[in-house]
Image (tube, rainbow, N blue to C red; front, side, top):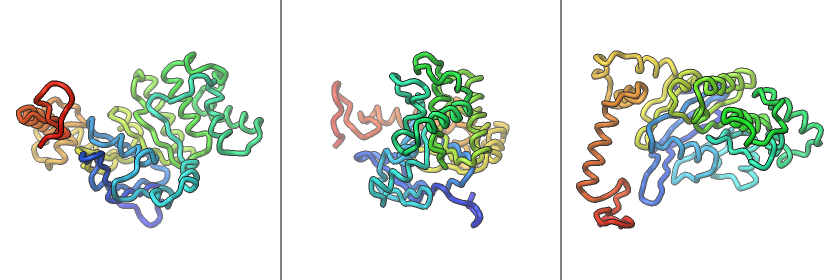
Length: 300
């Protein structure tokens, strides 16, 4: 959905390509992400969604194309310039990524201590506010090993919010959580977006969570954008009866199978055909010769 002139674009991706050696992981990705929206990036294993996230946060460098965050082309920035951009976004990693030797409160305080000149008593007050937001203020003195997996995710979210970022990136925020805890994380994401105008970029394969939090959805397949649309547009495809699925375009049939988690469809048929072909030819997905036991050799 194109943005209007009154909508602030916080992230803009243009013709993004990422290759690792001879393998193309992303090809020609175009995407605009607006202020105050939650956008969910999804797709099957190996579709490129994690690579896209790493490119957005600067962990990978594009092979070609551009990524603009808050109006700055991040590829053109030096280290100091990119550090200024990084201060305006937070990241919730899949595991929470807390430092195990530090208390929950100390983990949240760390970015404030490293990137600001605030007095210790001010930092302590901010830590309490952020932990209260995620329901963990009374657990500030505990070590990560003393709290549950869901609490570690919430502590990681409090740390990601420490610098009052404009953008939050989430890597599989519901992974490994029970349904109730997952629902709590979903509500926190919605609350932060609603109350603070944060732009949320969420990579997930959890469909219940995706349809709860998303304003818009992006589905990747084979390194390309298959579909971008509102949650309602994706929901209409998901709810189509099987008898109507054959009338969908080829790309939408892939979306349909993924959203419904169906065992039969273009994704599985393609996967089976590719695996069988590669096995017959004696090569793996990267074109390496695997006809002999041991390490793979480049195919001739």
